[in-house]
Length: 307
Image (cartoon, rainbow, N blue to C red; front, side):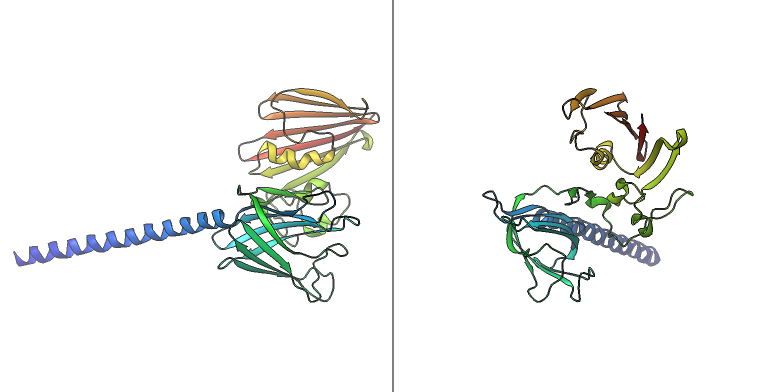
């Protein structure tokens, strides 16, 4: 009888111990999720300053919470009239108690780029270190401003001064190399310096693969891209840099229009809801763009055909 009581007591103690461990685990998981959400609500969004009148100094900052302690950012500032010199920078910072420091050597000179961030309610003060800081900005461009949060929605991408579209979710530093998979084309840092590589690769989409070949004795060039995990709109946002006459957003139905006094004809045709064919007809030839959604990626095929 005593043995039975002892066994029952041990059994109940084991249950209580297991329950406490599970509760602690759930509490810890909930705290991590809460911290990440708090970071998004506290820091994430779009911040701006200046620009109240034409020619005024102005700037914009996109803040993307990567996790509960690190943020990705992109800054774009302009000195305003009369020079309109400007500068841009992106990077990763670790924030603690609303403050962060960014330091990186960009090989612009003997000194590092050094920026200080201080977040307050719906604002961030960004200050460039005064002592020989080398961030690569234009002449006379210096950051010492309070950026007010104008949009609390988490930005998904930003567009650089060279009109490249960079998605935060696929963010990589320029020193990162892509990985070769399944014997497909390798895109590495040394390839990015090659002028023959198409501008779509400058998006630095993680896992992007690319191939190019020619037909018709070199009169037709075909480029194929595979964007893992991308939507059709994301691929289009990158690919539309091929011509400024393309619409900013994908049309929801077939569309045809002319630009440049009728010299350029643009046609959007949905073969299926997940297969879009675009034609750009120029006086000297036609460019075709196909964007096709697959199960786990989106394909882009661009064909340059001379008349």
